[in-house]
Every structure is written in C-alpha cells, then in structure tokens.
Image (cartoon, rainbow, N blue to C red):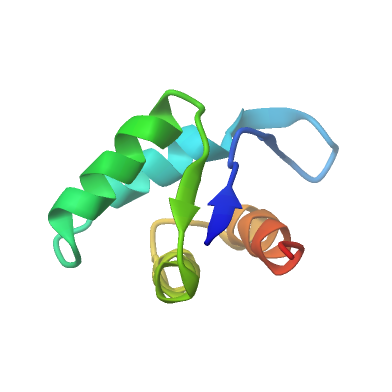
Length: 89
C-alpha cells in the first residue's frame, strides 16, 4: 500500500499558488462517470478534507490514468500531479 498525500499547493509558471492539489483531485473524482463510485467518493471525501489516502498498485495506476486522460486538466496541473506520483517510493 502507498499513501498519497495530495495536500500541496499547485503553482503557476511564476510559482504563485493556484489551488490545493487534493481538493482538485477530489473534484475530479466525483465528476467522473465511470469507475468504482464508492471508492472514488470515499477518496474524494478524504482528499477534499486534505487528508491522505491509502492505495494499492492497481489504484495508483487508476489515479495516474485518470489524471493523464482527463481533458479538463491542463498540462500545467497534470505535470505537477504526475511528478508527485512518480516521486513515490
């Protein structure tokens, strides 16, 4: 199991804070129309409260795919999420 702590601030190209990563992922999860509704909802509740979530390897892959494939997220935001996920041990 891995702990994902998205409680960090996303930044624009000038380093200015533009929003909390966990809150954004929570909003993304609850607006999906496919996937494990109960799991995504429970994750969203925790992330919106700026709490970490526990995921296994398959869940981690799902989250990476959701972020990477989400047309509503910009490259600016996707890159920061994916860099965080790549840095997990």
